[in-house]
Image (tube, rainbow, N blue to C red):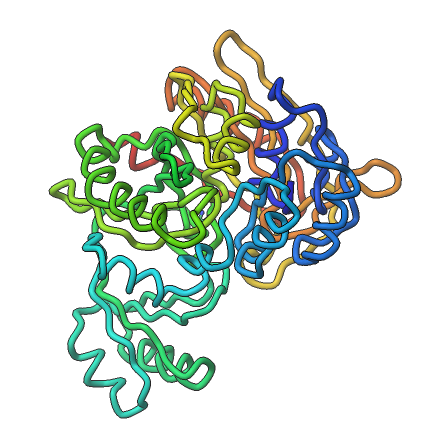
Length: 417
Ligand code: GLY
């Protein structure tokens, strides 16, 4: 398992609970993965070292958490050594690595998404912005962990963002703003078929009420009721089927997760906001606990082109996760601070609660210290969303980390439906 965030802790838990998996090795992992697997001091960006370690250990499957190693060709290198890899090859990973590439693919096969313009000349900035209604959406065509996107109603800020992108990258993308409610659908895919996991909803803004700066995600829940059965049928027919048809016919088939970031408008019409080529974080933390079937077999099937032979069972439960972030996040953060109260679990009938660790590591005395922006998330699993939220908040309320913050309104859209 490659990566070191909360998503990777969720993957490592799911894999370690799979009867098909004997041991989980993590590169580099975090404090959470060290409790369910073996961490190795190998960076997720060191492709040669990951391939060498995989050969040395004789692993049966490599599961890649983040997108950057995929864009850099980790899956290509592993497959060249006949090591099954859950995660697409570098060309497939360009669905996330280049927003322009994703837009062109969608345009060519008629997948619904917002209109866009490429701006290369400074003289075209104002005419292009004139042709879109505010708020303006300006994107850099780089892998920037969500940081290359500006959504603003300020014309001067929009102009500045376009100008900076042209200076940095030679061009900017200006996109139509899509209104509605967002949802994420993770699709486990290979050339033989695909499986749509239960829909989830992230909370990308730092503060309650969707205020404040954009983050990697401050909490999530699944299933997201905005994605009704009717909406999901449209997502399947209008987005997933054409994308699967396109990807299965590429020279090298796409094996891994296609993360479909959706905007669902007030008529229930879905459009693609973005594709990612991996599980979402924190969507993975709420989606993986809903998978009843053996996760190792599911991911191996996708890595081997045999997903059409898989039957996957889901738990008829609700899950939620609430992220605890370091002081300063999503800006410059304070790290190295002691975390207490994190090792609490709830088991009450069908309700359970536990912690996914992310930017956190043990020191030599076994104390848990913060080491990143998103430090951990408290996850609840229960028959209802309300009970799942209660479990997650009960846990997070008891955790102490100086200067940390979390949102107190995770799930508010679902609760107000
Ligand atoms: N939660 C958003 C993402 O994983 O990209």
